[in-house]
Image (tube, rainbow, N blue to C red; front, side, top):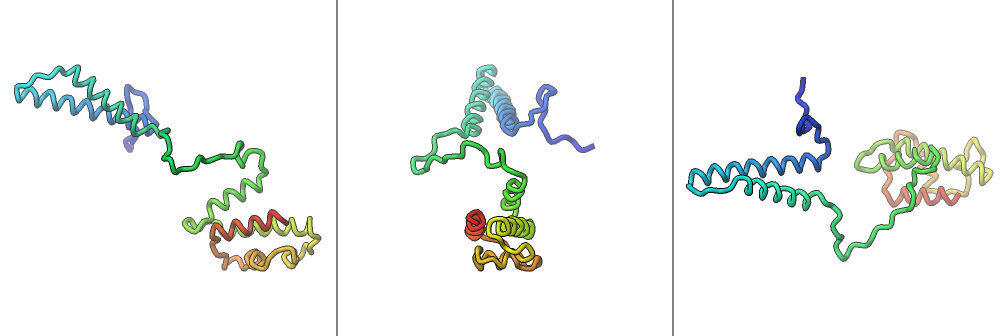
Length: 179
């Protein structure tokens, strides 16, 4: 059976990365203390091992706090980010959540689900064109209410769906929302 890669302290599992980091700093401080006491004994210099252990562990905790604490004040040139008061997923319907997931997974880096994103945008656009603009349900994209670039993107064959740049996707989403 493969050995577990997680760190155990006193039989309990230290699962967080910060906890593992603190334990590793503590162990490193203890090893350094033992080495200093042994080398000091060989050189004839007597160190109090308890004081050295406390200093090493205190230093480990201070270093750990400076590494782990992420709540430092931002640099002066940063603007404060204003997050929406509620999540976009709270109270949204399943189609909105699916669209958000497809958008995040269809960027140029991942190249995933570009066809699925195009199909969902086509479904939403066709539904809006038929419902709000009286478009023909058999060919809703023939409506003059949508732009030529959006029409060509939505009616493209499934094998030729290109990845969308963020700016183009944003303009398509704005146009669909204005329908």
